[in-house]
Length: 172
Image (cartoon, rainbow, N blue to C red; front, side, top):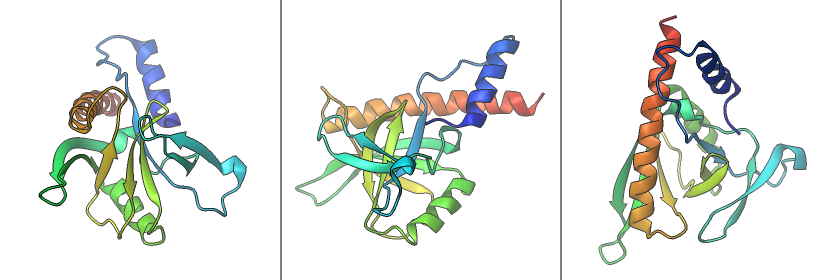
């Protein structure tokens, strides 16, 4: 499920060895819910860990780990139903891909995946033009707030490590 380009870069850096930044242990990606017309070979099912919701997604992610810039916990909802969500900010190229995709995908969902495990879901209610994706996340044994804080912290660490790796590769 991870980018072949990123895996090749990580493999090269492991072989070269010297002055290699830390390798991220968690790679995130954003997948899209598969349309009913998608063939069985182009789709797979992902299951959220707490709610047990099973979503068929396309096998190729729309947003790769190296395209995630930052995550931030946010609070949203009616005053008596406020809930924590994970804001995932993506780079400009991916934001364009998301905008183009969401023009035709209203009513479907984005799925946030970390290391092949679904951790979040986002309904596509409108065209997304700003590169900000807002996920409801869940993790077994954690409250909503704890899950958002934990996932945000871990993904930001991985995003920083990935940026260092990509910068190291550019400077070669």
